[in-house]
Length: 148
Image (cartoon, rainbow, N blue to C red; front, side, top):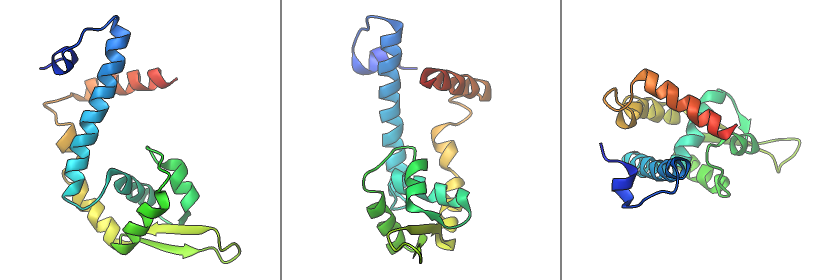
């Protein structure tokens, strides 16, 4: 196992500093893996996130609700949804009372694509070889603690 010290050839003034850099480095490493994985499906991670939000909603929800629920906030969420609409992965309707309000819902094509992605997504990033269930639980606890 390579350590963060090996990866970036650096020394740290404290374990907290090392943990912060390690967290940022690992987040970037995971993002690169995910982006490469999503390229196979012609999706960005932000588009994937939108599809997962819509799958969870199970009905039309406002674009603003999608924006609020996104893991990584994006100023171009509307443009991302336009691309998903072009690919027929989502459906869109305007509110009849207020034409400025737009509602979106995942289409059957979007559900089918997510089902295909779900078959290998988690295994691609967290196999049993990498983290045990107990280690993943501990990591989740520590990440939650860090944000509190």
